Image 1 (spheres, rainbow, N blue to C red):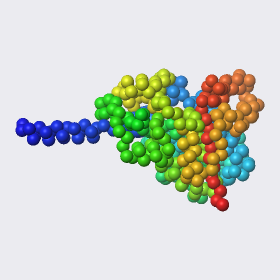
Image 2 (image 1 turned 30 degrees about the horizontal axis):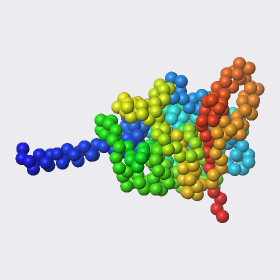
Image 3 (image 1 turned 120 degrees about the vertical axis):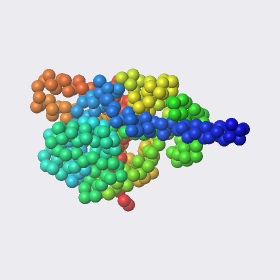
Image 4 (image 1 turned 90 degrees about the vertical axis):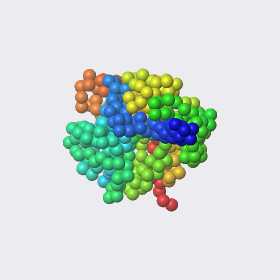
Length: 356
């Protein structure tokens, strides 16, 4: 082989090597949502990798149903009403909301339509089946781009642990994280798209969520087709941006920190959940930037109590035996306990901004 041919071969090998190095954000997107992505087969609950408020108690959805009825009574929402969950996983949350709404109200269910915004095909059939079994009703499923609120007086959109599932870039000391094809870590310069993202989001380092602004902008464009709407989200995080590397993985209820993740990328890839703390001030900034009205931000415990969780439990106690009541009350405790999910998780709500 001539020296020129060898040089050309080395250049080609170098270019090929660069092609198979991708930013951590793209790697995380494939990790969670790719063809073999984790969320296509995720196990949630006591026998899974982690549990959520939905898997702890049906009264989580019941409290939301109780709240929807109150919003209708206070004329903050109106019938006909479209109730949408984004990121439904198996669909239990939306099923619980519908079941309690049916039990607690008269004449409401007939004028409600239930929708799951779910792009993963593996979950769509399962969601339809679970919803049908719980409510005897059909569940509409669509992508965000296909959501349509025309013809509905109001919309109520809810999510649980949605924002912490957006793929994010990892920025540290003015460097960004890249991953090779064989799951090796490479720190490199910040590319121009990410620089622009950091500038737009007014962030310096940490977990920088990809697609977050595009999602919020697209959602609000759809929601504003309705005359009134409420968007309610529950998630793990805080009001301010964290500067440390708070990315973590969940596997068999074990929490792995950032260092553990980087040391075991190959074995964890697409086999564990990957998440981080939500920067709620950023979420609020983006919603308000795209003309939504901030309603409240509070702990999950305070939100559920304000929505009438204890009143709902009291109503339930009048129709069941004492042992059943105690059993359900015990399930509710972690939802509102400071040592459970009650303080660590937050509730954030936005409503339609009235035109001046």
